[in-house]
Length: 243
Image 1 (tube, rainbow, N blue to C red):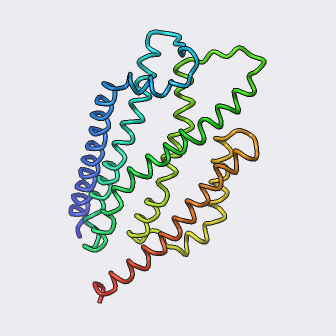
Image 2 (image 1 turned 180 degrees about the horizontal axis):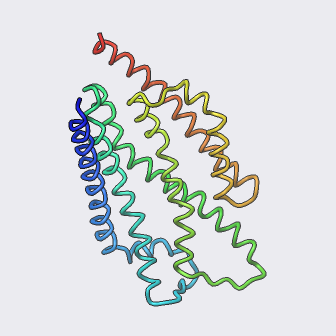
């Protein structure tokens, strides 16, 4: 391949990548606008357990709060689309078997993201909020809407991302980038990183840390097991092709 052909090939890759990014961003913007139209009922639902009304410190705070809520909804909608665009970008270099296998992971992306959000919202968020409220008995608490929802998002969205671990590892295993042996060797480092993440986002007490660390460790072990299954299946289906 000549230098000109290599340059043309690289330009085509950049154009394709740009196209995939633009589709993903476009989907996010459309979903954001659609979610914004229905954000007021969502706001009322998310603040149903709050005593009184949340405060705002300026006229634009209301817009920022609504945008934060709509942004999380848009992110959930965009996640599977982003996964599909990644698949479309890498699919030219895959075998037909790999294409079918990796495409099957796209629906799981949305499901795991919602599961992570639910875990953060129904388990972690009330636990942390209750702990912090117990420390404020000697203070007069007055929550602003912006800080309240920023706190809620910080307690939920990271778990939506972390719960994508199994499908991401399966996807990378299908592409041959990861394998079960490599994941097993990385176990100590992975446990350390997951422990740091759990301790960072939870209150400083042992019970809260365990409630977060254990599910994250289980997610990693499930990911290793799924990677093993995908790896064995990949070897079985690709061997006849290579022959």
